Every structure is written in structure tokens, then in C-alpha cells.
Image 1 (cartoon, helix red, strand yellow):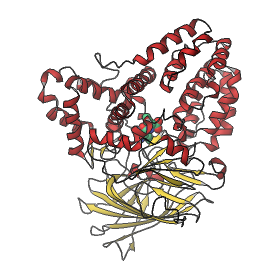
Image 2 (cartoon, rainbow, N blue to C red):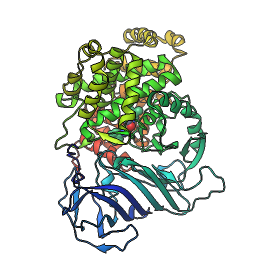
Image 3 (cartoon, helix red, strand yellow):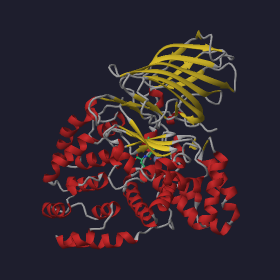
Image 4 (cartoon, rainbow, N blue to C red):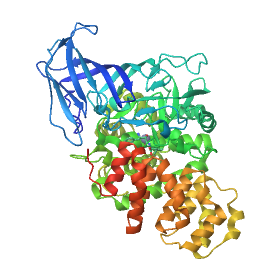
Length: 603
Ligand code: BES
Ligand code: ZN
């Protein structure tokens, strides 16, 4: 076991193996309160149990020898609060007290929780709550060993206002889509498979369910659920494509919860229940690679988990690689290639701005927030590394190795070193000529992209480059006919082809001919809005403002605010928009924008 610098806990001495939650959701006070009962396994006697917490109010700690009690109060101390790690909760329980019950309440500022007012939902009638535990936010709503190297099963009882539904990353003890199933306000869940704390998730709101296949479905607010079901209609095909690569889907069901637009991420792979942004609902399935991605985490991440946040690339690199393999099966090679080329472009752009230490797959996060490591490096450089192995060994041999890797490490948390040993013993050793083509050590421990890395190209981008080349020199409305059949990825590529300065006249022509400001596709609109900011293109100001005040997805917000902050005029606009938008942003997104605009609000 390696040391997790982002947890105060001592799992090498005493370890949680099961969690029982009993929580009540209070929308008025923005608080969860109740108990967390932990089942422990001791490796050592005479040591206290150390848990991670962040802004929790601990009322009482009790310990017992049997799950049903009796429990008796034990001493505990809450240590000093670190801005990144929170505060350690040290519990003095006897060596034979393997059950510890903590009575506590969360703070309204808990970083894992976003409390939405009815106005922030689609239906405007009911409040909404959702959690986001990755990377180290679980500790702000549950006192536990908040380390991805510690896996536990869980059960939960969640009490909510009567007319709302609670969902968790677990098996729900109520019937899906049963028309007679009225909300009860009292829900129970079971997760019998051991998962790390960052995958514990809860959402509470006015949501409805639609089946996509017998083992998959979608939850969303009533006005969104049918659109979501149409968008994600290929989910079962994706699951089957993934099973061919990875082995059987082990989590019983695969459901998707579409959140309100302030959800700070594209998606989050909560087991059995992916959380997804509504900004991927484009009406034409063009952005569903996000579902392929979160689904792929059912294996890479949820079954085989990064042991520390320095090994994050094991989660995201494998997932990005398999995401493209799923896309290839379901939507064809051309689409998968376009997505890979776009990913490579983004990686190169971001990497050019990153210090060398952040360009390394096995990243050193000493003293830093693990969210700092969530750049495109673990995703795209990680996927590129696996593509390099695939190309050197051939798909057949690489796929056999992948399957063996997932079979071997299922329900384990592993480090980069463990991965590397398994790679060496089961792939590299078998063909030294192929192995010589992939500088594994360089991929894992050096900045930049190794020379000789795969270069994926896309034929579909050739005509796009041609049309963009014309527009770069002059207005070319006659090219519109050539773009009629273009897909979203081609439009993304087109917009990225422009230099920083386009000029107001050309911007106006582009918008007039192609209608970018009115695009209903969030990725296309985002690329266009980036251009409008770079060019201070005034006619798009209202659209930019609307986007920034309605969408909370950090991937879109960060670059837009960064671009705005580059000029004094832009910065002033950014601050005005942010003053209005911030209350609607998730704490994680707000923290990112605070630092861009120089607001020092490190909690
Ligand atoms: N697990 C991540 C989201 C995440 C990473 C949350 C790190 C907190 C810390 C999820 O699988 C993810 O990668 N989401 C991406 C979308 C994906 C298609 C690249 C996102 O949210 O942008
Ligand atoms: Zn991911």
C-alpha cells in the first residue's frame, strides 16, 4: 500500500470495510444530519481511528462490538483544519469495538454539496441537492477514510421532503419507473460491492425515470427526461461494446441522472448512476461520447481504481482510451478519429501552458489540491500512451492484455507501479521488439509527449481545413454549401482553426452565414463564444452573458473567464457577470473562477 497524501486516515492500521448512513436532508438550513456507522477491520491494536472531515459538526461518537449495539460514547478530537485536507477526527475506541457510530451534521458550505433553489431547476417548483465527492469532497458530507485506496460497501437510509426522490450510487430499494410509486420521502439503498469513498453519491429532486433497456435508464426532471432518453438511446449498445473490450458489466444496472445546468462537470461516474450535465443534450447524439466515457469508468476507475490521486491517469487515461473504442463501435471509426484529434489539439494547447511537473502522468501532488492534477494530461496523454502500446503490439494482443488487467485487479485500488509491473510481465516481456517501440518510463515520468507518439489523423477534417483556410483570408459565404453535412466535431475543428484576431467584420459574417450565436450545441457555442471574447465581438455579448449565467460546467466557464480576464474591459465584464452568476455556480466551479479573477476565497 502506498501513502495517500490527501488523507489523514491510517488504513494500514485500522480500515473501514462498510458504511451505514442514516441522513435527513434539510433544504431550509442546507444541512444533512444523522449518523454514519462504520464497520472496521483492525490490522493493529492500540491505535486510534483517524477519519477525514471537512466542515462537519460532530455531535457524538459511540463505539460497540456488535452492529446493533449496545453503543457507548467514546472520546474524540477534531484536529486543526487544513484548507486543502480539512480536519482529522481522531477516535479513541477499544480494540474490540469494530463498530463506530458518528452523529453529525454538514455545513451549508460543504464543498461536496450543491443546494439548488427551485429557480435553479428546470421545473422551478422544487429544490434540488446533489453531491460531488471526487476527488476529496466526500469528507465534507461523511466522516470517513477519504482515500481511493480504501474500499467499502455501503447502505443508506435517506429522508427527504415527501414529494422528492432520492437517488444514490447504489441499488435503490424501490421500483424504477413504477407509475404507482409515489415519492415517499424515505428511501433505502444498498451497495454490496466495495467502492472508494469518492464514488459515494446522492441526489435529491423532482425526477422521473425512463427505461433505455432492461438494465439501463435515465433520470431527469420531468421536462427534460424524454429529451434525455432520446439522446442516450444508444446506451445499451455502448454497454455491449464496452463488455467486449473489458469483460462483463458487473454493477447490475447502468442508469444516468441528468442534473440541472449548474452541475460543475461534464459527467461523474458514480457507480450504477452516472451524473451528467444537461449540456450534452444536443438533440442529435453528437456529444454522447461523455456517456461512453462515464460508462467506461465502470471498469477503469470503479472496478480498478487509482490508489492515490497521483495515479489519477490510471482512471482517466484508460477511460479516455476505451471511450474512443466504444465510440468507434457505436458511431464508426471516422467519429472516433475526429474526437481523438480534437482531444490531442486540446492536450497540446493546455500542455503548452502547464509547468513541466504537471505534464507528467504519474504526478507529484505533494501539498496540493488533487483537483490541480485534473488537467487533460491524465486523460489525453494517458490515452495516447495506451494507443502507443496498442499500435506497437497490435490490437489483438493489446486487447487480451487489457482484459487480463481488468480481470486481475477488479475491486482493487492500484498504483502506477503495480500497473507497470503488470504491463512488464504480461505484455512487454512477451515481445521485446514491440516493447522497444514504447518508452514506458518516459511516458510515465517525463514531461511532454515522447517523440514517436501516435499521430491520429482524420480525413473528415480535410474539407474543414480547406473551408477554414478560405475564411482566414476573406469572407466566403459561398462555402456554406460545402458545410451542409458537417457534424459537430467538424464545426469544433473549424472554429478552432481561426487565429486569435479575426476582426469584427469577419466575425459578423461568420455569424450571419453560419448562425453560431444561435447554436443549440454547447460545444459549438462554447468555441464560438471563445472567439467572440478574443475579438471583443459586441453583438455576442448577450449570448455570452446568458451562457455564463445559466451553465455551471467548469470546463466551459474556466476558459471563458480566463479569456475575458486578459483585457481590462473584459475583466470588468467578467466581474459584472460573475457577481450575478456566482450564487448559481457549484462551490468547485466558483473556486476556480475566484482564482482567475483574483478573489482570495480559499475556504
Ligand atoms: N471523474 C471525472 C470527473 C472528475 C475528475 C471529477 C476529477 C472530480 C475530479 C469524469 O469522469 C470526467 O472525466 N468528466 C469529464 C468529461 C469527460 C467526457 C472528459 C468532465 O466532467 O469534463
Ligand atoms: Zn473520467
